Length: 323
Image 1 (cartoon, rainbow, N blue to C red):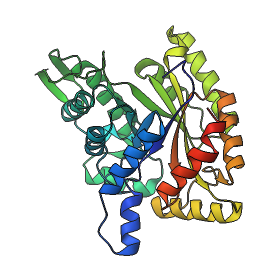
Image 2 (cartoon, rainbow, N blue to C red):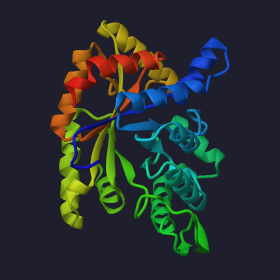
Image 3 (spheres, rainbow, N blue to C red):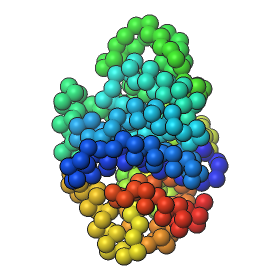
Image 4 (cartoon, one colour):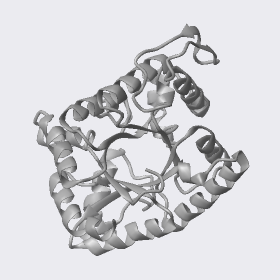
């Protein structure tokens, strides 16, 4: 998507669906995922996204959900925002991602991250027998192996985490040379190693929890790293993941959004960095600030249990002013 007009995608409520069911004491209705996905395509959005977590913030499995959504849609890209590859075996993950990309005719975007630095969530890594402090190194090893395994050629690995010999997997992804990988970047921090990994291994950067001025700084830092590694910065997509709530009363919209997120993440640790919340113009102004800072695509998460109402309102009164 790099270099094109601004693209917009919508996050499906694969966790929100379960949280709402806990409140109502009713069984979650899976058809709501498919209805929303088909509506997103019908409205003309360019992509559909899902999040990932195993125990810390339970939800529907990300790649299984995208495969199912791919069967009821035709055009939108299908992305993870973001997936935790360090939790997975690269052989199994290479097969699953390649299969999803194959079955959806080359629509997968593999957005990935190292996982939250909030210590409250470390227990899910420990439950999997993984040392949380090694998750960054594991992620890099997984990504390097995915790129090799996606070629369909025999692969040997001397990784300290994933040693194997002569592994050859099929199918290969429809997209060549493989599924595009977008790295979670930023979070209000400017870490040189982040940019180096992105430029060496990634096709996109997904910023989150950043202000527009911070996004602009990330863009500049990515360009500098591209110069170091002699890579064209135009080959890297620059995406902003925004969590927002529409409401004519800004105070009530903020309470709704922050309440939704606090339940979503167990406790509030983000210090007001998510949002915006409020009337359409508040959202329009913030999105356009990110566009001016260099954002070329957006993933929108609605912080509300009224997902369809928020989607319709955003489409009608916000999106036309941000394209």
